[in-house]
Amino acid sequence: MNYTGFSLKDHRFIKLLGKGSSEEVYLAEHMYLQTYVAIKMQKARLDVASQQRFLYEAKIVAHLDHPHIIPVLDFTISKGRLSCFSTSEDVPDIFISIFIEHIT
Image (cartoon, rainbow, N blue to C red; front, side, top):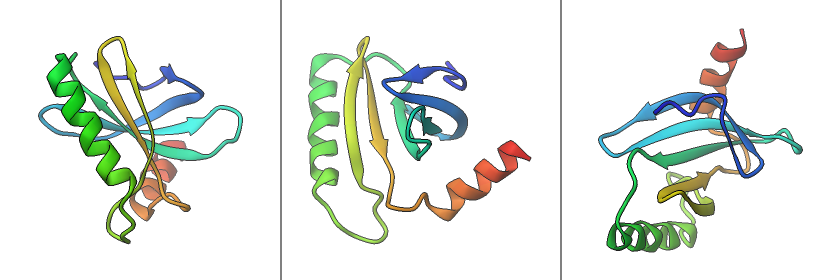
């Protein structure tokens, strides 16, 4: 499912940035703050064990501080699908260039 145009929490999905076998990454805008994040969405509903594993990985990444790792800022489970909100202080250049392509 393509989530472009949909909302999750206070974020509106702007554009699909990429996808793998089990997840998709979207550029999203906070509706009130007008800040941008990358949101990783699971393509399918996950069983409880898979949800726990994904949460465990998100917790680990949330505590890492490295210039080549985009930090996890938020995590949510909605209707059995997992979402991982990520951004850095500045949206990475790749997201900016894709966003510029989207609005021009």
